Length: 499
Image 1 (cartoon, rainbow, N blue to C red):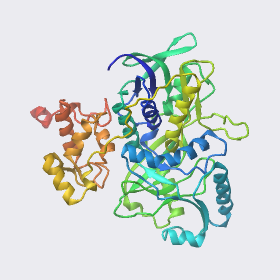
Image 2: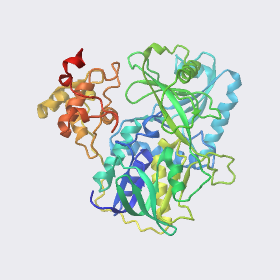
Image 3: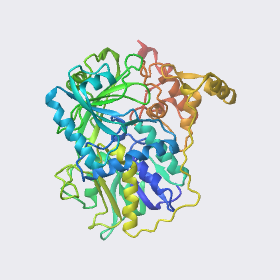
Image 4: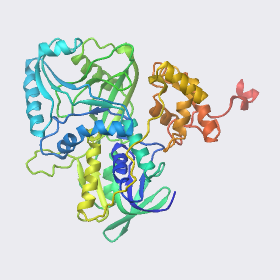
């Protein structure tokens, strides 16, 4: 660490916190981004639908609608500058049966009010032509051409790395405990790694954002309720749909969708079940059955024998009312500088469409700081580009041959399912924000996500991490302290133990 005093300290290194760090890094300032986990994006960012929403779903006038529609067109430039995978296949909201058609019309009109471009209503016949696998009972659909897909973790890493390249610092395994106060002014934070001082502290703590704001005496009535969403991941060799398919939304959310990913898989989910435990990301038989039924409503031929993985994530559902009195909506984003406490930018309830809205939220945070009188001087040498790293699986044979000639470690395939090489793993371990756990390598490279789910690569990755980090294999973890893979070496077993 350079020091313990900063201009801006951001709590939470998910996609929102990382985007804020990147936005602020263009100014002359000392920035620190902290997170309690061993890697970036291990909260709500790590497990979601990876959709860049057009913006027809949030109620007009809400912060969700405003930031969603503002951010959606920003993603093309972001992906070009930060070199992460991004596609715009477009999305459909599909009505099954005549009784669901009015809901599609309502979303269309809502999208017009929100200023969403590229929408149109199509008939059931047109929908069947667009997607032969769709339920033949389809009666119509809303098409939005601006619907996109990304890898949320790639986005988070890319934004945070670009911030680091521009002078920001990142400190992981650093848990927020309390604020440091002088009267009614926040002057820093107390963490598990000591005290850090800052002119401004930004609460981007996701599922724990209510806990953080309450420590400062802000919004004592605001509560984050975890809403669990479970998913299936299907083998890319068995099914590939053409676009993103949503059902008619309900009071619980956007519903169980079917979509491709930028990695070529199809995912289905999520459901939306309110739970009490902010750490419970387990999958359940009941939840997975619910997902299967929802997916088959859209695509009846969905074969769950193609499933290669399941996962679950938590959405930080808040209870804040919209700042617009005309909006009858009780579940909006919180993006504010609270009047009763100085030196705090407070974010909360950043659930869907939080991924989509993240760059606009970062932009809004900067605007709030300027409105509060903070002087932000742009750097003349700010660099928006985060260079891409080689991805062996996406290269031609000639490109692979040239890469291996320059670095022989790219010639050793560690993950056969996804064609990930040792060279790629080593580059991530020594990246601007080092990957120091198996899951960190997995999310950055996509190894371990194919049919064998890491059965082939795991021992090899453990060996590489041990070698590159200079630690014992017994210290290598899956996701941080407490998740070590190995207990002891086999040769340490005595004869009695072996018997």
